[in-house]
Amino acid sequence: MKHCLLALFILNSYLIKAQSSKDSVINVVNNLFDAMRNADAKQLKACFTDSAILQTIVPSAPGTVKVRTDRVDDFAEFLSNEARGNADERIQLEAIHIDGALASVWTPYAFYYKGKFSHCGVNSLQLVRLGSGWKIQYLIDTRRKEGCSGN
Image 1 (tube, rainbow, N blue to C red):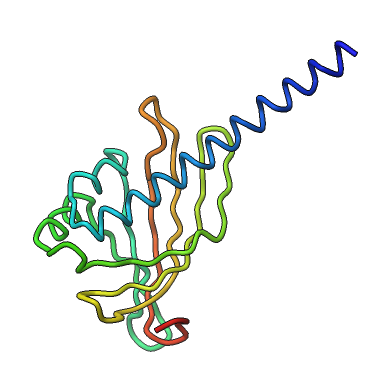
Image 2: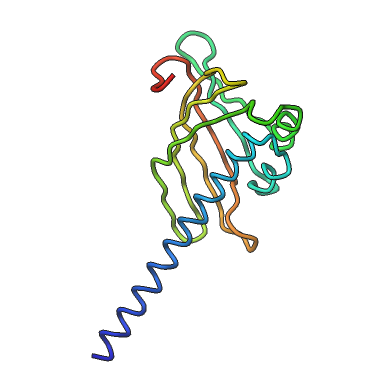
């Protein structure tokens, strides 16, 4: 009986920790997109590690793509010059995977700029759990205007 109770306690502790890790990852991702909507550069920068990488896969010549790299500071500066509500990226949390201090999040999205549909795509985020909590280390996205639902 004692072994059974101990096993249940350990399993319950593991499930609580797993749930809180998942919730913490979701909070960081939601904070990122809330910061965009609120034009809050400080909140946005707080979501990322100091060495974070932002990339976008963009169409180039017909049938080819390029990968564009941006800096978090440049993105934060862009947001700080926007009015609240101008940059509205509406995401769906589709997949979240966590292994220790690594998390991967997949979010299809539709982006609206100044209330008008702009484009859609998918964000792939890689987060790392540091002493200060979960932070985004890498974000890459796709962008397109066709094949978007809800626009």
